[in-house]
Length: 398
Image (tube, rainbow, N blue to C red; front, side, top):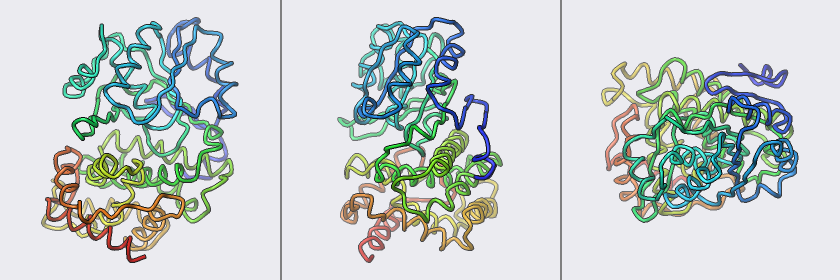
């Protein structure tokens, strides 16, 4: 599907059932009832801190007030403490359906809370323990996701990111119960999104698109999804990112969703592995942290040869990268890398910190995440330290 096809009509996809290009308030009640399998389900809405200020919030709530309704606000990154608190709210309300409305952090928190709500006494310790094992499925209320930012793909993945600040680690909760049964992609929910948030989300989409294509776990479908996400964003990357029109919001939202589907198949790679320390130690937003190293990793992976970690060989990896290059409408890896850098260093984003003194620590932390093992070219501390230092030097040379 290209951007023109998408603009012409609404799109219905499966697994999760995905409804695109409609007004969320007009389908909310029907979607909730279908997910619950009953006409009067008990509904909990988990939303972000800016929810009440958005113009579409009241119509959406009005559509859901025909059901027993409880609203909870999730602020900041999901932590074991906040997820445990949300899980207790879901349990106390005896929710038949969990509706998450927000960006990636809100959706991840809601997904994790739904999964943990089957515990008799959700606690931070049980959240951490479940991350180390896997989420159960029996009795977990179905999840409906309404993303208000493009790019995280959380509405399309069976996992959730949880930040354990005491340990300085990113945890991942995984399990089929975390995959939303329905995702409603309404471009109007992006209205009012600050430019910095949008640019960060676009970088997340670009990273997931490339990583979903070149990962050692990639297949033909994830390659297509990653390349198509890039094709949808190709024109948007060269435009101003404040005050997007309806067609641009459609394209951004669908691109983020397709990239999320790509990593649901293939997983992320070393860009995401390095991003976690950049978020925890340097305070960068997730998308900004992923995008900051993406151009350098692209150049590195494009030169894969005898150091290939994909059993299908280096040719497969280079072919996947070429597919994305062509989808982006450029003629070389270097042109693609420069397009990424232009967005990663957008004036809409806060200035990136000087990570050179911390490069070895970030590299060491990154290799402890399984995401690093998905990278198609072999990496070690020395290689990642050079990539991080090179990224910082290019940034400061601008």
